[in-house]
Image (cartoon, rainbow, N blue to C red; front, side):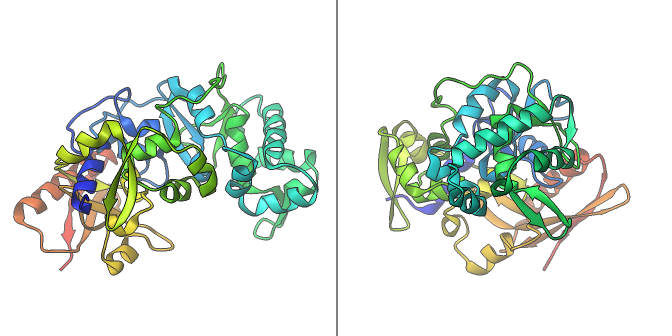
Length: 363
């Protein structure tokens, strides 16, 4: 049996949230992908893990639509292995990942993987030079038949379903140009996929390595994949542990790390940081009211992490060139903890190229 505090400290250490400095090459979260959503996206997630992102360029990293169709940052050198790792496990898996788009395809007798390959081939033909997403979508709508298309009321136009569009992009060898909004797609230079999955980037293994101990359902929910597909590919080299009365798996190689990790340090985590993406939310945040505050339907805040425990939420307030960080604590914070949070806020302000006006601790 392992208590939740031990689990969280293991994850802090596995995700390197307790280190002072690191490089892209040795940053573990880049194996699973760093979600790039919002101002405190991928760059901030790397910064709180000690990576100097001031000179980060697209010669070193690549931005792809991958897990759950969200944009994720990876090392450019790994792109072929990543493309193989993020591919759906089966036709049924592809159908689950593309949501409602699978229904008209099924009615037309078109397999989900076949559809993704068809969309990818068309996308590849369209994107010969960097092209804005809307232009790619508009071209595809004239090239593909009805089962691939839907009418969009807000746009008053017919588009491809969104998830097949996003998930086909990697299959087409396309990346997202950094820092573009709306997104610009372009071809990945010299793109080739790895012939077979690599253990380092295998999504089930890397989930267990960074967010374990876990169950097949936790991993399936993270990927939007069927539990059956995940169970069929569950690693053999795991040990079972019990967390909160639930039997979970951990890679055997990480058993000693689970027992010994201390995972100390204070961090302001962005709303979509990997530490918060775990699917055992009750383990991470046992209090239902706090969980509701951290994961609202819209407008997620960031989270305050102190020595392996989440102790509150935070939101940035920017006025001109000045930034205020508003912290909502879930417990009484010591003076030393407040000082550590303020130091993190200073780092955030520098990251945003602003001046910290102050930290507003509610209550």
